[in-house]
Length: 114
Image (cartoon, rainbow, N blue to C red; front, side):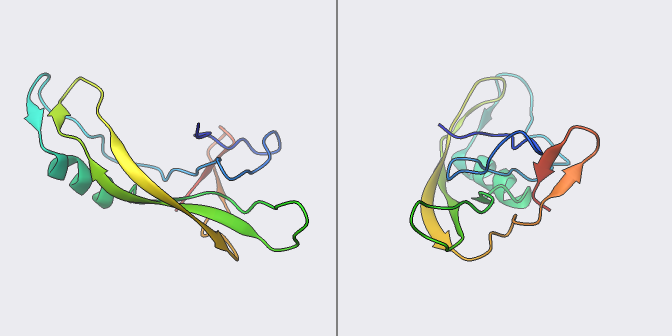
């Protein structure tokens, strides 16, 4: 299970805490109209949802910084107004996460990936 929101001061970053970027446009169309897997992949890529990262986290017995990177590999076609799926492959990395210096968005206290 992936934690979709990382709350400032109340949540400890872990390997399953994923930071999502702010999205300016929604994936939308006429209800019940079909879309292809390519349409969904194009939207996710344009919206910078094709690579997602966790904040840095620690592992027991190590002083190294770790983060997990999720890379989009495919999506399912579907119809607007119904649930579909996108598939990512996870890889653990060492070093500073691209979201290790998060930006607080508005008054919600969410971390966002910019």
